[in-house]
Image (cartoon, rainbow, N blue to C red; front, side, top):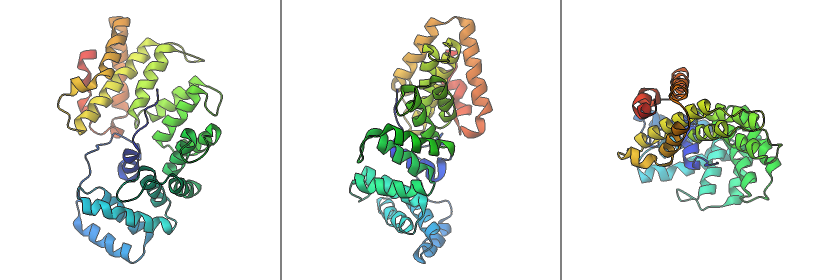
Amino acid sequence: MKMRIGLIASTLLLIGWRDTLGQVNPDARQGPSQPSLTTDLRHRAEQGEAEAQYQLAVQLSQIENPEDSAEAPKWFRKAAEQGHAQAQAQVGELYLLGMDGVDKDLQQAITWFRKAAEQGDALGQAELAFMYETGAGVPQNYAEAVRWYTRAADQGLPLAQFDLAYMYENGRGVTADIEKAVHLYELAALGVPTARHNLAVLYLQGGGSVRKDPVLGYKWAVLAVSAEVQRLFHERKVDQEHRLGHALIFVEDIAKSINNSQKRTGYRLAEEWINSNASHLGEEPRMFTTATKKFR
């Protein structure tokens, strides 16, 4: 199963919150806490400093003011034209999505993603890979997608680790390797919640050198519910249980197929994973018990 994170989310995540690609608060678009910093950045940006232009664009894009957010593309573009790799990736996103007054243009998106990718920017590499994987604006080429996903994944980008795992799971551009896919999904699980669901499925099914393990399947299913509750909390969805839908049904079905001892073990393993990764998970550790207590 591949449900890729929205590119807008990935853009903002890499800008400031996406060193892990999660856990992300999609509503964290707010004005800078130090207005003078934006004033100083604007002065430096107007003087032609590429990094200041990029940082100013980042701040403007996170302000809930249409006039400010609409100004961000101008500064991303100015920084990109000076060779700023992260800005080049953001310009690629703007063309890919057709947003903030920028017309959608896949060829321009590819051009800017490639510029960023060739400079070693992980987002640029991952998005260029995605273009090759999907055949968006270029002939579909799984091998080339794997090449660029690998470069980005090697830099620790969870989105790329997730996409590369999917390629290994399904044998796209590489020989299918479920063990490699599991390893990559586990790396991505901190930042890409869908990776947790995919791990649950793989452990429940088994395959290749990965043995069927319902306890580990339950662990990852519980963690998938935890991630979904966290997402809904940040989106301020109050009817969470109704909206959880598939995630709840999935973990409940697994619970019916295993005994109480296996459930307890799987839940304990999920707790241990949360606790050992607490510093990377934002508010999720605090919310975990409440979100998943019915599955203990």
